[in-house]
Every structure is written in C-alpha cells, then in structure tokens.
Length: 354
Image 1 (spheres, helix red, strand yellow):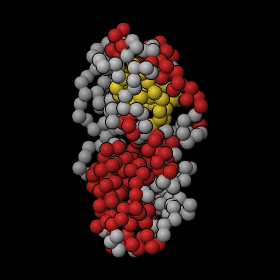
Image 2 (tube, helix red, strand yellow):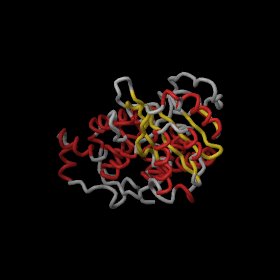
Image 3 (cartoon, one colour):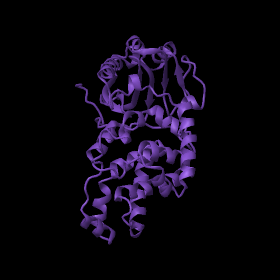
C-alpha cells in the first residue's frame, strides 16, 4: 500500500533548498517547514489523546524533538513522514503517563432524570474535534478524500472506541488504517517487526469491531454533514432557542442518549431525556435565556448553546454534538467546555439584539 504520508499529490512540494537550510540549523526555515504540517499533526495527536489541548502540547513537543533530531533525517522518507513518526512516538510517551479518555456511559449507569445531575468530576473525558480544525487540515494540502479526514475516522464513536486500545495497538491501527502507512513503514517508525505490526493490527481491529459499529450505508455516504442532518440540526437549534422539550423529543430516536461530560450523569431513552430537560434545563426561568448556533464537530452536526447572563449577554454554555442514524438523533453529547467555541469559530458572546 502506498503511504498517505508519502503518496504523490498528498504533500505539497518542498524546495530541497528549504529542507537543506532547515536541517543545517536555520531556525526560520525549519519553523516554516514544520508549520506546513501543524494542522494534520494536531489531528493525528488528537486521535491518540482525545483532547485538543493535549494535541496542541504534543505538536509543540514534536517540533522540539524534530529540531533536536534534525541531523537524523536522512531523506529515506518524506519530511512529512518523518514528522509523523516523531509525533507518533511523542504521543505514545504521553499515553504512558496519562489515563485513557472515556465517555460517561463507560463509567456509570444511566441517571434518574428526575434527580439533580452528579457534580462534574476530573475524569479524563473524551473531547470533540471541531470541523473548523479539519478544514485547516485540507487547507494545509491534505487530499480531502484521504482516510485521514474522512468521517468514519473522525466521528466520536470511532474516537471513543480506539481509546480502549493499548497504546502500541492504537499507534499501529492509526498508522496503518488512518494514515495508511505500509506494515514496513509502521514497523520502522515504531521499532517493531513487520510480523508484530500485523499481529497488533489484527488484535486492534478485533477490539474495534466489538466497540464500534460501522454504518457506511447511512452515515458515511458523504465525508461531511448530509442535507438531512443539516435539516435536523436547524430544527434542533430552533428547539433550544425556544427551550421546547417537545420539539427536541420529536427529533430523537426512542433509544437516544444524552451524555454531558464533565458530569458523569447521562440519560437513556427519549422519555428520560425529555424528563431531564423539562425539570432541569428547559424550565420556566430559562425561557428566552438560551440561544443556539449551528456548527459541526467530528464530521457530525453540532450546536453551540449560549445562556444569557445578568448583564444581558449570551455566554457560551455547551457544545452539543449530535449523532444521527436513520433520520433520527440517537445521541446528544453535551460538552460543557466553553473554550471549544473559539475552536469552532463561534463568537465569544451574543448580544441582546440576536
């Protein structure tokens, strides 16, 4: 298989003079060279860590390691592939020090929708990846049809599933099935034998099959969000604007789930979700205090929800990522992480005239 990290047409041409100058110690030339790959390396590290902040830290670590090891680049692979190898090993080092990221249903059973949600915890929760960052990957020169940014390799369910893989199996799966490296390239990067790479890949794929159901027919026909999903998203935005429980429930599948990290509380089924929203979110006191804007994350429809403060400005509350199957929303994952709004390109606040 031809490597996505070295395939023709998937890497911008690099002037050999630029590479020579960078490797000779020209800091400006080196910085310009590595910056071309920042966006895709950020996505690569996010797949390992499940966090945009962790990914940013690892990209910086990758650049520092690349600078200190620049004399080791012999030109046997592309400069891009060399950076991928460094980023992969930096991610593996980080994974050995940190717990895997999880979702609430993996740590506790469904909550009583009539009770108050549990308080937020410092569990390492899986975080979303704004589509605006994926657009940066395409803008950097990556083929928009490459597996690297296709929907099936970016959706939340896939990211949640690969968090269950041991670090080295995770690395093998990502390099072989997402970055599309050959077994030989992967073995060289990870200091493994080809046989051990193939064995690790088989075990990783088996785990993935148990934890992630591929629905190519109805959710991966397009690389991004379908028109049907856009329609559902528009109706969901309107329902949150109006704090209309009935309208939200009408968009949900019967077995839908509402998940709300950093609280471990989550709600199972349309009825439970409606009960929770009516009693704790869409109360009379919240009428007119919510606004929502459409966006996207992990190649899935999403909305940014704002709540009006005492000064009359609408402040970021949560990013809600929607999972859609067969024309209905089967999961709402509500991330109470305001910093995600800027990454999605959403405004820091909304004025009272909106």
